[in-house]
Image (cartoon, rainbow, N blue to C red; front, side, top):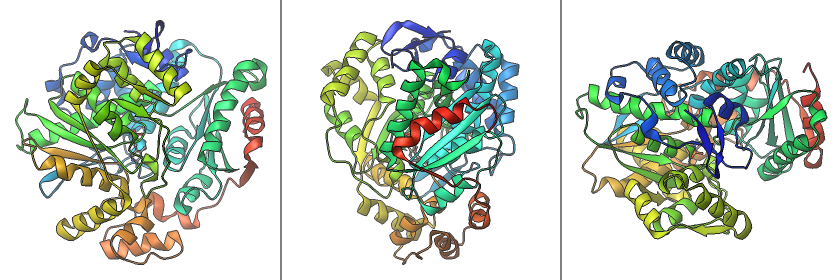
Length: 493
Ligand SMILES: *Cc1c(COP(=O)(O)O)cnc(C)c1O
């Protein structure tokens, strides 16, 4: 099975090649062109434990790997790394279900994919006979950086470099990153904001492409959700939560369910649509946004317009105006019309907006719903769910919960809300929502939240305060490219 660029059907790649490249040479995203090529008996999956289920789904999506190989990779990625063996537990909360994706090594949902991606990359290097070292460059607004460091540290043949905005992430997030161990990791704070870090990383890619000797034989790659190797592992928990509901006799095999997904880059929810294409009986996928509601407007009106004010919200991982993975949906909903996708992406780039054809909008709306919620309503949702059901949500989950209220009123099928972060990752906002006065120091907020909720602080966060700082590099944003190229060119870090 070959993947193809969303923008040009002549750019194709095997699964391992697509994983190593991250993005197609024309800037498009690698995609499956025909889901009916994929051999997978989805009903059989429901009988499996989560890790073998993951292996089976990933093998179907990446058939260059044998079932035995993929079993091995999934075990290495997940065994003993999550709080529970089922990786992503499902909790009943009132008349809905919450799918907890945050029980991994850094308490963020990105762990699900970033635990698996290093395994897939390492195996892809072997399969393609790649000799060069890969250097992963990551700009982060907080969560991705740590999850990527955790996934890639000490992985042979791969190095990882993370840039975060100096004083622009929470104290806990900063501590998570600067205490990272490993002989292949570099972490630097940038005097600038997240966009400066992101721009610097993009420019580094361009500079390396122009000057191939600058890297001394290593190759740059990326670990964000434009990489198909990061998207594929996210398909698993949709099946897993469905299997839970079957086991608990809430539904019978074949009954439909709906998912409400807190959305930023559109990777998580797109994985849900992949699950549906693979056979999972999904009624609707509801896209939940915060005040940066570019996707709500798009799904309602068919116009994607990124020219609008950017809001900093209490759900920062969803503060995004250009959702990269939407490009893959456009490709699927246009019957793989790569010319159309290329033209829409060009319009987005040059004019800041595009409109999809009416028939395409109708198709999209048949599958996806949308809603948004501001910070105030997010806080109300946290408090209400805590007081009514004794369940503590983080701010991102709360956005989805609030959006699910309206949908739930008319839904006949079970509704599953995806939970993407532990409340302990955003203790300040969660305490405020509960009507408490958060302590000034964020580490004290962790203790405060634990005492109020009677929930334990996740282990990976509780030891942070006293962990040794191993990375204290601070650079100006203009220095990023030189720093990155120079570091990438060094054999030993
Ligand atoms: C990344 C992230 C999201 C958004 O997921 P996308 O796949 O980018 O849509 C939501 N919540 C949290 C906590 C995240 O870290």
